[in-house]
Image 1 (cartoon, one colour):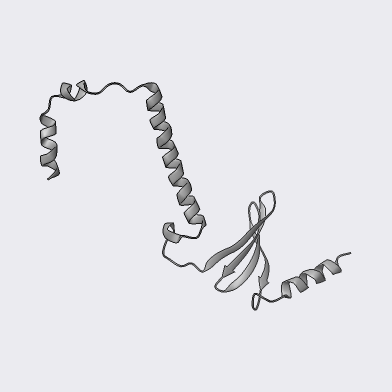
Image 2 (tube, rainbow, N blue to C red; image 1 turned 90 degrees about the horizontal axis):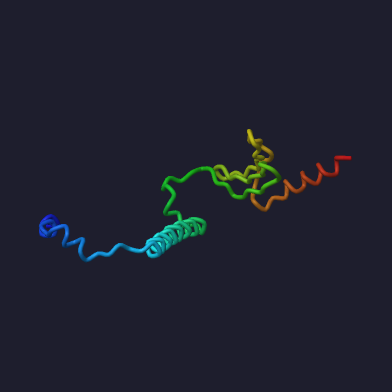
Length: 126
């Protein structure tokens, strides 16, 4: 069907098509380019915002067993990362070339074991 609509257009002489068009000015060409660039950047920002808000349409459907709950920078390229692996929370330190296991949070989330161990460690240092 589309071929039949295209065929009569091909029969028109090329100079008939060229006669009605005037060369676009530099200003209008630049304006079209600028508007097209703004539209593309706007679409990219919209996708980024939607992904940040938690819409999972860009991610795969496979559930993973590892979730990054929180990340805090410490300095340079080092950071602390709270990770949940199969229901267990782990605190890991991330550096330039390695990842170190720091603490395993046992029990429920309301447990104060980590805070108690931290206070004992702070008091033990001279």
